[in-house]
Image (cartoon, rainbow, N blue to C red; front, side, top):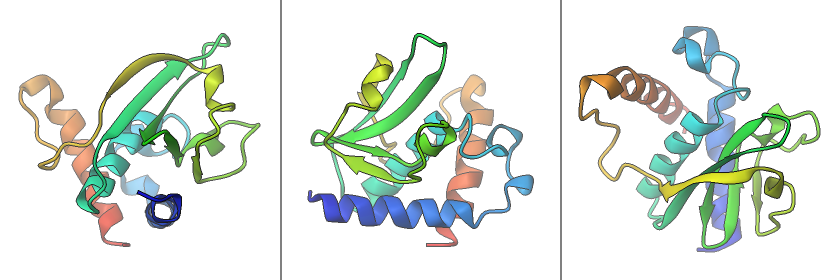
Length: 144
């Protein structure tokens, strides 16, 4: 996987997200990109997987100032399309092997990302979460 392809997919997805009417999306997404990094990372992972990109890690962590953040990693490259929610980051799409900005967040979660078969709930607890992910994912795909 080359960085050009990763950047193109991530940029296309971010542009599609920016075209959404966030007021009509589930409430937990309405402040995009703020507070949506985990869910958006999961949605982006699904999209990347459908584009033939495998071995995607979902990574999240928290900083000393109680801030938390989530992003994806593929072959050592960070893919982050919500870092611009932070005042010291103005780039809406980050694809880099430079981990310096993200190192402020002490890693708390690392798992294989992507759902391989779409967003499916396996129990009633995750039903609302997966429904919301599906709503945003399908709305975004309409702009790609």
